[in-house]
Length: 231
Image 1 (cartoon, one colour):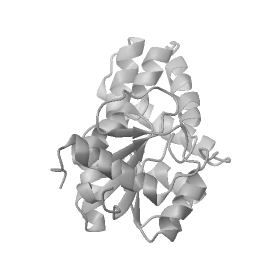
Image 2: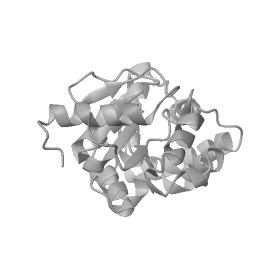
Image 3: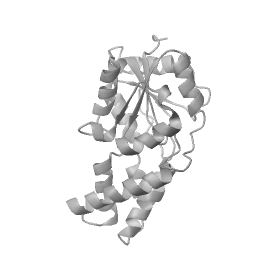
Image 4: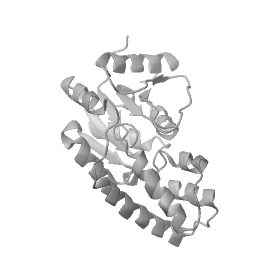
């Protein structure tokens, strides 16, 4: 089995917190503000997408011109509405709190890597607990969010590590592409939508029972897929 990884890089929405349901409320209300109903197909395309790109997907999907003013007003609407929703209790995903504790007890480095903008991610950190994380990187702190790998590369850099020394944990196709593109090993726990089963990915139903051996196994799968050239 491969060596123990040095760090775990966690996605937030849909992976650690069941907060995609809060975003679902907000984006459907945004569509109704424009006299439209959001189809499930368009909603699913938004999952894991970075802010500006997500808004363009949304407006293209509902047939509303995505002018700079429309995008700006929509961004303000979503921030205000999601803030309201996050001020209430944010439910955890099954096994997430124990998994975070396991990583800390194993003395591994830990990062939160989310496409959510910093002002909203702070509410998630209030629920999760900042002591679980050495650093956090948000979608508005890199030039391009997921599926671009830059956000994972930045997280590894801030930890003083190579992406190949890290295991990412994701729930969406967008996040999975970003993590693999950066060179991280990857554990996928689908939440709202299916994630393609492509080589190099390890799938689990939940975070319940996640162990250091599982992290090692994910690294082994990645290394085997890349022919041992991940680092």
